[in-house]
Length: 353
Image (cartoon, rainbow, N blue to C red; front, top):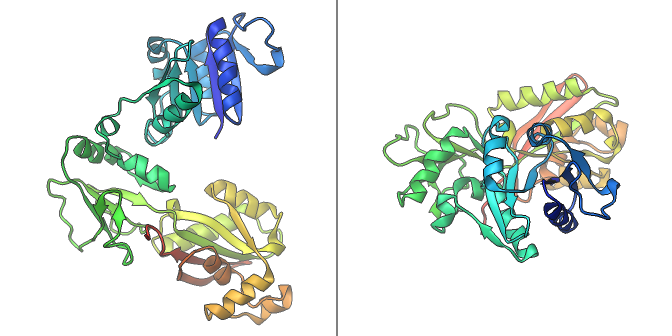
Protein backbone atom coordinates (compact mmCIF):
# COMPACT_ATOMS: atom_id res chain seq x y z
CA UNK A 1 0.00 0.00 0.00
CA UNK A 2 1.62 3.23 -1.13
CA UNK A 3 1.14 6.53 0.73
CA UNK A 4 1.45 10.14 -0.39
CA UNK A 5 1.74 12.74 2.40
CA UNK A 6 1.02 16.35 1.42
CA UNK A 7 1.78 19.42 3.56
CA UNK A 8 1.17 23.13 2.97
CA UNK A 9 3.04 24.74 5.87
CA UNK A 10 6.41 24.46 7.57
CA UNK A 11 4.75 22.92 10.62
CA UNK A 12 2.93 20.53 8.36
CA UNK A 13 6.20 19.55 6.70
CA UNK A 14 7.59 18.41 10.05
CA UNK A 15 4.56 16.21 10.66
CA UNK A 16 4.71 14.92 7.06
CA UNK A 17 8.22 13.58 7.59
CA UNK A 18 7.14 12.01 10.88
CA UNK A 19 4.21 10.28 9.17
CA UNK A 20 6.50 9.07 6.39
CA UNK A 21 8.74 7.45 8.99
CA UNK A 22 5.77 5.55 10.43
CA UNK A 23 4.51 3.95 7.22
CA UNK A 24 6.09 2.00 4.39
CA UNK A 25 6.26 3.10 0.74
CA UNK A 26 5.59 6.78 1.31
CA UNK A 27 6.32 9.89 -0.78
CA UNK A 28 6.25 13.38 0.75
CA UNK A 29 5.01 16.49 -1.09
CA UNK A 30 5.50 19.99 0.38
CA UNK A 31 4.22 23.33 -0.92
CA UNK A 32 6.98 25.42 -2.46
CA UNK A 33 9.32 27.09 0.01
CA UNK A 34 7.62 25.70 3.11
CA UNK A 35 9.88 22.77 4.01
CA UNK A 36 11.33 23.18 7.49
CA UNK A 37 15.00 24.27 7.68
CA UNK A 38 17.39 21.35 7.40
CA UNK A 39 15.02 19.03 5.54
CA UNK A 40 17.02 17.52 2.70
CA UNK A 41 15.65 18.11 -0.79
CA UNK A 42 15.83 14.42 -1.65
CA UNK A 43 13.32 13.65 1.12
CA UNK A 44 10.40 15.42 -0.55
CA UNK A 45 8.94 16.78 -3.77
CA UNK A 46 7.97 20.43 -4.02
CA UNK A 47 4.68 21.48 -5.64
CA UNK A 48 3.09 24.79 -6.71
CA UNK A 49 -0.63 23.96 -6.92
CA UNK A 50 -2.57 21.66 -4.57
CA UNK A 51 -5.26 21.09 -7.19
CA UNK A 52 -2.77 20.09 -9.86
CA UNK A 53 -0.93 17.84 -7.40
CA UNK A 54 -4.10 16.02 -6.32
CA UNK A 55 -5.05 15.46 -9.95
CA UNK A 56 -1.66 13.84 -10.49
CA UNK A 57 -1.40 11.70 -7.35
CA UNK A 58 -4.99 10.55 -6.69
CA UNK A 59 -4.79 7.72 -9.28
CA UNK A 60 -1.25 6.72 -8.24
CA UNK A 61 -1.53 6.13 -4.49
CA UNK A 62 -3.77 3.95 -2.32
CA UNK A 63 -3.59 6.38 0.64
CA UNK A 64 -3.40 10.19 0.55
CA UNK A 65 -2.57 11.97 3.83
CA UNK A 66 -3.31 15.70 3.68
CA UNK A 67 -1.90 17.88 6.48
CA UNK A 68 -4.10 20.96 6.23
CA UNK A 69 -7.54 22.32 7.09
CA UNK A 70 -10.43 20.04 6.15
CA UNK A 71 -12.11 22.96 4.36
CA UNK A 72 -9.18 23.29 1.95
CA UNK A 73 -9.45 19.57 1.19
CA UNK A 74 -13.20 19.78 0.56
CA UNK A 75 -12.83 22.70 -1.84
CA UNK A 76 -9.96 21.14 -3.76
CA UNK A 77 -10.54 17.41 -4.00
CA UNK A 78 -13.98 17.33 -5.65
CA UNK A 79 -12.97 17.37 -9.35
CA UNK A 80 -10.71 14.34 -8.87
CA UNK A 81 -13.19 11.92 -7.27
CA UNK A 82 -13.94 8.86 -9.42
CA UNK A 83 -16.23 6.69 -7.25
CA UNK A 84 -16.36 4.55 -4.10
CA UNK A 85 -14.55 1.66 -5.75
CA UNK A 86 -11.79 3.77 -7.33
CA UNK A 87 -10.95 6.60 -4.94
CA UNK A 88 -7.97 6.22 -2.60
CA UNK A 89 -8.29 6.42 1.16
CA UNK A 90 -7.92 10.07 2.18
CA UNK A 91 -6.87 11.11 5.70
CA UNK A 92 -6.75 14.72 6.89
CA UNK A 93 -4.47 15.82 9.76
CA UNK A 94 -4.05 19.14 11.52
CA UNK A 95 -0.43 20.26 11.50
CA UNK A 96 -0.03 19.64 15.24
CA UNK A 97 -1.04 16.01 14.75
CA UNK A 98 -3.93 16.11 17.22
CA UNK A 99 -6.58 14.60 14.95
CA UNK A 100 -6.61 12.06 12.11
CA UNK A 101 -9.81 12.42 10.10
CA UNK A 102 -11.08 9.67 7.80
CA UNK A 103 -12.26 11.92 4.97
CA UNK A 104 -12.80 9.62 1.97
CA UNK A 105 -13.16 5.89 1.21
CA UNK A 106 -13.70 5.00 4.84
CA UNK A 107 -14.81 1.45 4.04
CA UNK A 108 -13.74 0.27 0.58
CA UNK A 109 -10.48 2.22 0.71
CA UNK A 110 -9.88 1.38 4.36
CA UNK A 111 -9.57 5.01 5.52
CA UNK A 112 -11.40 4.37 8.80
CA UNK A 113 -9.06 1.55 9.79
CA UNK A 114 -6.02 3.49 8.60
CA UNK A 115 -7.08 6.58 10.57
CA UNK A 116 -7.33 4.55 13.77
CA UNK A 117 -3.93 2.94 13.15
CA UNK A 118 -2.13 6.19 12.29
CA UNK A 119 -3.72 8.02 15.22
CA UNK A 120 -2.45 5.34 17.59
CA UNK A 121 1.10 5.76 16.28
CA UNK A 122 0.95 9.56 16.53
CA UNK A 123 -0.82 9.68 19.88
CA UNK A 124 -3.67 11.48 18.11
CA UNK A 125 -7.45 11.11 18.11
CA UNK A 126 -9.09 9.36 15.13
CA UNK A 127 -12.21 11.02 13.75
CA UNK A 128 -14.65 8.60 12.10
CA UNK A 129 -18.03 9.84 10.88
CA UNK A 130 -19.47 6.99 8.78
CA UNK A 131 -22.90 6.06 10.17
CA UNK A 132 -22.31 2.33 10.60
CA UNK A 133 -19.05 2.84 12.48
CA UNK A 134 -20.58 5.49 14.75
CA UNK A 135 -23.26 2.93 15.69
CA UNK A 136 -20.66 0.20 16.22
CA UNK A 137 -21.89 -1.78 13.20
CA UNK A 138 -19.60 -3.38 10.62
CA UNK A 139 -20.46 -2.01 7.17
CA UNK A 140 -20.76 -4.53 4.37
CA UNK A 141 -17.88 -2.97 2.42
CA UNK A 142 -15.65 -2.98 5.51
CA UNK A 143 -16.40 -6.66 6.08
CA UNK A 144 -15.68 -7.68 2.50
CA UNK A 145 -12.51 -5.60 2.44
CA UNK A 146 -11.23 -7.40 5.54
CA UNK A 147 -11.86 -10.71 3.78
CA UNK A 148 -10.24 -9.56 0.55
CA UNK A 149 -13.55 -9.94 -1.30
CA UNK A 150 -15.20 -7.61 -3.81
CA UNK A 151 -18.68 -6.09 -4.20
CA UNK A 152 -20.86 -5.27 -7.18
CA UNK A 153 -22.64 -3.15 -8.16
CA UNK A 154 -21.02 -0.43 -6.08
CA UNK A 155 -24.31 1.50 -6.13
CA UNK A 156 -25.88 -1.28 -4.05
CA UNK A 157 -23.55 -0.73 -1.10
CA UNK A 158 -25.40 2.39 0.05
CA UNK A 159 -28.77 0.62 0.31
CA UNK A 160 -27.35 -2.18 2.46
CA UNK A 161 -25.28 0.09 4.71
CA UNK A 162 -28.19 2.50 5.09
CA UNK A 163 -30.38 -0.34 6.35
CA UNK A 164 -27.70 -1.45 8.82
CA UNK A 165 -27.10 2.12 10.06
CA UNK A 166 -30.83 2.62 10.64
CA UNK A 167 -31.25 -0.61 12.57
CA UNK A 168 -33.09 -2.45 9.79
CA UNK A 169 -32.36 -6.04 8.86
CA UNK A 170 -30.84 -7.39 5.66
CA UNK A 171 -30.99 -10.84 4.09
CA UNK A 172 -27.77 -12.68 3.19
CA UNK A 173 -28.12 -15.62 0.78
CA UNK A 174 -25.84 -17.78 -1.34
CA UNK A 175 -26.09 -20.16 -4.27
CA UNK A 176 -22.87 -21.91 -3.12
CA UNK A 177 -23.98 -25.13 -1.44
CA UNK A 178 -21.32 -25.01 1.29
CA UNK A 179 -22.16 -21.50 2.61
CA UNK A 180 -25.76 -21.67 3.97
CA UNK A 181 -25.56 -21.92 7.75
CA UNK A 182 -22.24 -20.09 7.96
CA UNK A 183 -21.91 -16.52 9.26
CA UNK A 184 -21.31 -13.42 7.15
CA UNK A 185 -20.56 -10.85 9.82
CA UNK A 186 -23.51 -11.02 12.23
CA UNK A 187 -25.85 -12.58 9.65
CA UNK A 188 -26.43 -16.24 8.95
CA UNK A 189 -26.21 -17.09 5.27
CA UNK A 190 -29.42 -18.58 3.87
CA UNK A 191 -29.85 -20.65 0.74
CA UNK A 192 -30.69 -18.62 -2.35
CA UNK A 193 -34.09 -19.63 -3.66
CA UNK A 194 -34.77 -19.84 -7.43
CA UNK A 195 -37.16 -16.85 -7.33
CA UNK A 196 -35.80 -14.92 -4.35
CA UNK A 197 -38.03 -11.82 -4.04
CA UNK A 198 -36.53 -8.42 -3.38
CA UNK A 199 -39.08 -7.47 -0.74
CA UNK A 200 -38.35 -4.65 1.68
CA UNK A 201 -35.10 -6.04 3.04
CA UNK A 202 -31.90 -5.37 1.11
CA UNK A 203 -30.49 -8.66 -0.18
CA UNK A 204 -26.82 -9.59 -0.23
CA UNK A 205 -25.86 -12.56 -2.44
CA UNK A 206 -22.55 -14.33 -1.81
CA UNK A 207 -21.65 -16.00 -5.10
CA UNK A 208 -18.83 -16.59 -7.57
CA UNK A 209 -21.30 -17.19 -10.40
CA UNK A 210 -22.43 -14.65 -12.97
CA UNK A 211 -25.54 -16.26 -14.49
CA UNK A 212 -29.06 -14.88 -13.89
CA UNK A 213 -28.03 -12.06 -11.57
CA UNK A 214 -30.74 -10.33 -9.53
CA UNK A 215 -30.65 -6.66 -10.51
CA UNK A 216 -31.83 -5.48 -7.07
CA UNK A 217 -29.25 -7.42 -5.04
CA UNK A 218 -25.75 -6.55 -3.85
CA UNK A 219 -23.33 -9.29 -4.90
CA UNK A 220 -20.39 -10.30 -2.73
CA UNK A 221 -17.60 -11.91 -4.75
CA UNK A 222 -15.42 -14.20 -2.58
CA UNK A 223 -11.85 -14.75 -3.76
CA UNK A 224 -12.07 -18.54 -3.81
CA UNK A 225 -11.31 -19.52 -7.42
CA UNK A 226 -7.87 -20.82 -8.36
CA UNK A 227 -7.01 -20.98 -12.06
CA UNK A 228 -4.63 -23.82 -12.94
CA UNK A 229 -2.67 -23.23 -16.14
CA UNK A 230 -0.48 -25.37 -18.36
CA UNK A 231 0.97 -23.84 -21.49
CA UNK A 232 3.67 -24.07 -24.08
CA UNK A 233 6.80 -21.98 -23.74
CA UNK A 234 6.67 -18.27 -24.63
CA UNK A 235 2.86 -18.17 -24.83
CA UNK A 236 1.56 -14.61 -25.20
CA UNK A 237 -0.55 -12.60 -22.77
CA UNK A 238 -3.28 -12.29 -25.37
CA UNK A 239 -3.54 -16.06 -25.82
CA UNK A 240 -3.58 -16.72 -22.08
CA UNK A 241 -6.12 -13.99 -21.39
CA UNK A 242 -8.40 -15.28 -24.13
CA UNK A 243 -8.26 -18.85 -22.75
CA UNK A 244 -8.96 -17.75 -19.18
CA UNK A 245 -11.77 -15.39 -20.22
CA UNK A 246 -13.44 -18.03 -22.38
CA UNK A 247 -13.27 -20.57 -19.57
CA UNK A 248 -14.77 -18.21 -16.98
CA UNK A 249 -17.50 -17.10 -19.38
CA UNK A 250 -18.36 -20.66 -20.42
CA UNK A 251 -18.82 -21.75 -16.80
CA UNK A 252 -20.36 -18.43 -15.71
CA UNK A 253 -17.68 -17.69 -13.12
CA UNK A 254 -16.78 -14.17 -11.97
CA UNK A 255 -13.26 -12.94 -12.70
CA UNK A 256 -13.57 -10.90 -9.48
CA UNK A 257 -13.41 -14.18 -7.55
CA UNK A 258 -10.05 -15.33 -8.92
CA UNK A 259 -7.62 -15.62 -6.01
CA UNK A 260 -4.50 -16.78 -7.84
CA UNK A 261 -3.03 -18.45 -10.89
CA UNK A 262 -1.31 -21.78 -10.29
CA UNK A 263 1.15 -23.63 -12.52
CA UNK A 264 4.44 -25.56 -12.57
CA UNK A 265 7.83 -24.24 -11.47
CA UNK A 266 9.18 -24.79 -14.98
CA UNK A 267 7.06 -21.79 -16.06
CA UNK A 268 8.75 -19.35 -13.69
CA UNK A 269 9.86 -16.14 -15.33
CA UNK A 270 7.74 -16.49 -18.47
CA UNK A 271 6.51 -13.06 -19.52
CA UNK A 272 3.02 -14.14 -20.61
CA UNK A 273 2.15 -15.60 -17.21
CA UNK A 274 3.65 -12.65 -15.36
CA UNK A 275 1.66 -10.18 -17.42
CA UNK A 276 -1.52 -12.23 -17.03
CA UNK A 277 -1.16 -12.06 -13.25
CA UNK A 278 -0.67 -8.29 -13.46
CA UNK A 279 -3.74 -7.98 -15.67
CA UNK A 280 -5.91 -9.99 -13.27
CA UNK A 281 -4.19 -8.42 -10.22
CA UNK A 282 -3.53 -11.78 -8.59
CA UNK A 283 -0.34 -13.67 -7.67
CA UNK A 284 1.10 -16.69 -9.50
CA UNK A 285 1.75 -19.77 -7.36
CA UNK A 286 4.31 -22.26 -8.69
CA UNK A 287 4.36 -25.96 -7.75
CA UNK A 288 7.14 -28.45 -8.31
CA UNK A 289 6.61 -31.51 -10.55
CA UNK A 290 6.74 -33.65 -7.39
CA UNK A 291 3.94 -31.63 -5.77
CA UNK A 292 1.84 -31.81 -8.93
CA UNK A 293 2.37 -35.57 -9.24
CA UNK A 294 1.28 -36.03 -5.64
CA UNK A 295 -1.91 -34.03 -6.28
CA UNK A 296 -2.69 -36.09 -9.42
CA UNK A 297 -2.66 -39.21 -7.27
CA UNK A 298 -4.36 -37.72 -4.21
CA UNK A 299 -7.30 -36.27 -6.14
CA UNK A 300 -7.44 -38.93 -8.90
CA UNK A 301 -7.05 -36.30 -11.63
CA UNK A 302 -6.69 -36.77 -15.37
CA UNK A 303 -3.28 -37.81 -16.72
CA UNK A 304 -1.40 -36.87 -19.87
CA UNK A 305 1.43 -38.97 -21.35
CA UNK A 306 2.43 -35.98 -23.51
CA UNK A 307 2.95 -33.70 -20.50
CA UNK A 308 4.74 -36.53 -18.72
CA UNK A 309 7.28 -36.70 -21.55
CA UNK A 310 7.72 -32.91 -21.62
CA UNK A 311 8.21 -32.02 -17.94
CA UNK A 312 8.01 -35.32 -16.05
CA UNK A 313 4.55 -34.89 -14.55
CA UNK A 314 1.24 -36.30 -15.78
CA UNK A 315 -0.76 -33.11 -15.35
CA UNK A 316 -0.36 -29.41 -14.60
CA UNK A 317 -3.54 -27.34 -14.75
CA UNK A 318 -5.82 -29.59 -12.64
CA UNK A 319 -3.35 -30.46 -9.85
CA UNK A 320 -2.04 -26.88 -9.71
CA UNK A 321 -5.57 -25.55 -9.27
CA UNK A 322 -6.35 -28.09 -6.54
CA UNK A 323 -3.14 -27.36 -4.63
CA UNK A 324 -4.04 -23.67 -4.44
CA UNK A 325 -7.12 -24.30 -2.28
CA UNK A 326 -7.37 -25.34 1.38
CA UNK A 327 -10.44 -27.49 0.76
CA UNK A 328 -10.58 -27.80 -3.04
CA UNK A 329 -13.30 -28.85 -5.41
CA UNK A 330 -12.57 -29.10 -9.13
CA UNK A 331 -15.37 -27.18 -10.85
CA UNK A 332 -13.77 -26.81 -14.28
CA UNK A 333 -11.84 -29.88 -15.50
CA UNK A 334 -8.96 -29.55 -17.92
CA UNK A 335 -10.08 -27.45 -20.86
CA UNK A 336 -7.80 -27.37 -23.88
CA UNK A 337 -6.98 -24.42 -26.12
CA UNK A 338 -4.15 -24.12 -28.68
CA UNK A 339 -1.00 -24.43 -26.56
CA UNK A 340 -2.89 -23.90 -23.28
CA UNK A 341 -4.79 -25.98 -20.73
CA UNK A 342 -7.04 -24.38 -18.10
CA UNK A 343 -8.73 -25.80 -14.99
CA UNK A 344 -10.51 -24.08 -12.11
CA UNK A 345 -10.75 -25.22 -8.49
CA UNK A 346 -13.05 -23.72 -5.89
CA UNK A 347 -11.97 -23.34 -2.27
CA UNK A 348 -14.99 -24.41 -0.16
CA UNK A 349 -13.30 -23.56 3.15
CA UNK A 350 -14.21 -19.85 3.08
CA UNK A 351 -16.02 -18.59 6.21
CA UNK A 352 -15.32 -21.90 7.95
CA UNK A 353 -15.14 -21.70 11.72
